[in-house]
Length: 269
Image: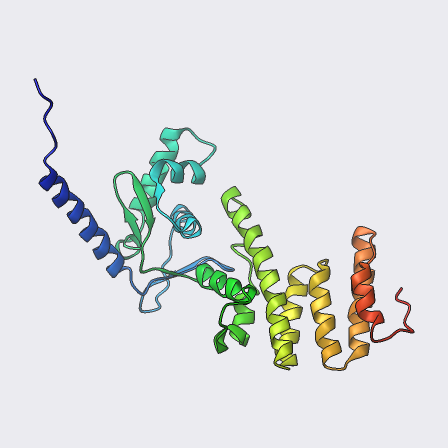
């Protein structure tokens, strides 16, 4: 007996139905905002903040950070790694069901997969785009990319009070990206002779990592470009003391040369 072949027209109708359902979910999610930089916040199109249980917060954050369609199995395993597969799967179903109806539209769910709705804006994605533009020499930078708001967007860590493995890895990647972006932004602002904004950008990088030499170098270059040699030297000496106290290290020759170029008689340390 010949095996029955699936009805292609019926399959096409089912596929179209699923596509329309997903498009409808995306449309209803339009205007929703998910904030992951600093404290977790989720708001609707009318700026009303939505209170969510912890498991639902973690689900939304996980899907936003993965930023692609995930299988239910992979999602459950990542969010609940220390329990049985059955327990993890049940916890995922519970996290989905406990989303309020208006919030539930922020994710697209099928039998086997789920992802964040297309209409949900995520501050992390916006800030990542900003960082990559600042680091791309060929990218066109608009006024917003060189603004105080840009400095603020690059000055906050990703979910700093969350310690799940999948968050910690993403947080470290964002931390490094934003530091490089702040240093690049500082250089661009100096080129425009916007020394006040450049100082704010460099200080944000220094505050994020007080032991990072390239951030201190960026701040020193701002002071030197503005003609403030004494302030540049003060930054160098403070960094030198911190580095000695914390790590027993000295600034690199490159940073010493940066100071020596403008004040040859200074013997740092």
